[in-house]
Length: 155
Image 1 (cartoon, rainbow, N blue to C red):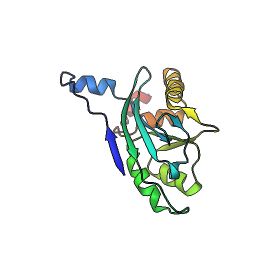
Image 2: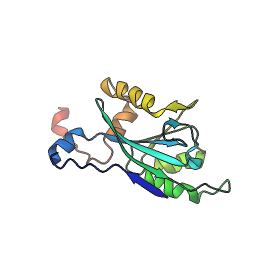
Image 3: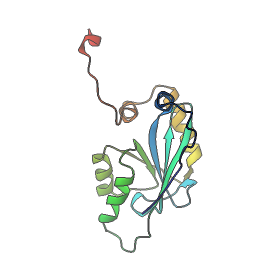
Image 4: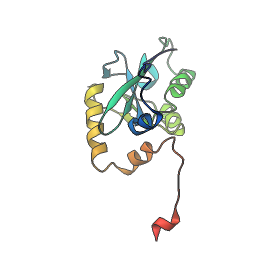
C-alpha cells in the first residue's frame, strides 16, 4: 500500500478556519483516479476527498498492489483501514462480506450502477448536502464528532 497525500503549506490558516472548512471524508474506489469504476475489493486506488456543501478538496490517494487471487478476505483489511475515517465509500461493486466489514467500520458504502466521474459524484453529493440530507447521511456527517445529548432541548 502506498499513500499519496496533499500537504497544505499555507501556514496562515488558523485552526478555527480549518475546523469551519472541515467536511466529511469521502472515498472513491477507482482504477484511474478520475472515475468510480472499481469493485471495492479489487480497486487499485482509493481517492479520498473532504467534501462540504460548498467546497471539496483532494486529501489523498491510497494505492494498492494488484491482487492475484479471488476470495482473499485479507485484502480488504488494508482498504478498510484506509477509509476508516471516511463517512462514505463509492464503488462500482462490493461483496456481501466486504459491505458488512465496511459498515462495521462505520463507513456507508454506495454502489453505482455504472462508472461515473468523481467530480460529478461530488457535485451531486454537495447538492444533497445543501438540501435536507436523508437520515443516514446526517448520521454520516457526524462521524468522528462526540455525540451530544441535551434533553432540555427536547422540551
